[in-house]
Image 1 (cartoon, rainbow, N blue to C red):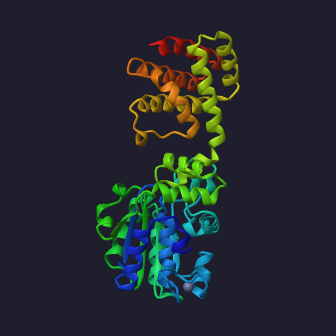
Image 2: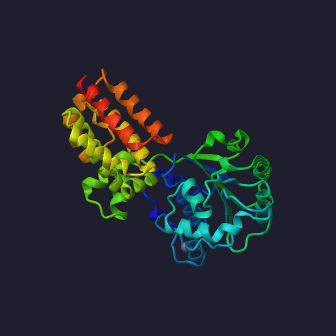
Image 3: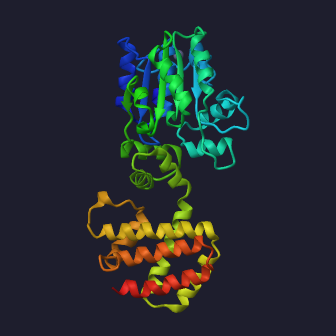
Length: 372
Ligand SMILES: [Zn+2]
């Protein structure tokens, strides 16, 4: 992984490069920041940069024997630890390395849920188990195979089992020579303060909106306007931007259903409300719930729209166009009523109340609320 393949984060890259140039690479670095900012690819690119035999123009060469191994994540001095779930105590991170390498090489921007769904079909939470620490110290106490440095990347150290965290603390206190720990964390406040204090902390900020728009445009065939919209909503998070692109068809469907029910209810179009109810009733429970939470978001966005401050609104172009006309109908007299009716419809669907009843009742209540 090369620095140039990572979206934005120029100042973080510069801090990392300088530490190598000035020969002061710390023994432990903590890359912290919110999801979707590129912390994991930065960690890997940094390790590759350190080990590259022909660094030039502020990046690894990508072609020397060390880089060739890094390109496949199979360098013998590059180690990974990450949360897993397991069936027996003998299972360690190394057992998941093939899936891990594939996931990272396909797209190094992913979150814990996405990783766990790769390795486990149940919704178990991943853990870095206690006995992983023995494997870590074993690997680090061996001499380096090929490179000057051994790099141990711990992804999501907030998921470390307490026993493992305490053992790692000991290694951090007296690190073996030429060892580089890179902790990649989204919830630094959940780490032992004693671990945090032994690392050099580097904050990885949300991506700039323009960088994110360019990233989305380069990966998906979106127009400039569309990619800017996605970037604005995703708020510096590349993973969220991808989710928005991938679910946009669903988003449009919910938008159309939202517009329909608001219009029909406002015009007291009983026939329209009935047809709408039939359509929504066929969506299935999971999507009905998603629609209702989408509708709550739209109500909030329309209320905020009245403040006429673009930077506070997170909507797509078509949502925005609709809000220009619809937002006056959402005001301080009815916002709480609207939200509370949508919430209670959501709760009823969750409790398996018949969908047709819930949605027709909702449409009726909207008639009164929209007149306020
Ligand atoms: Zn190289």
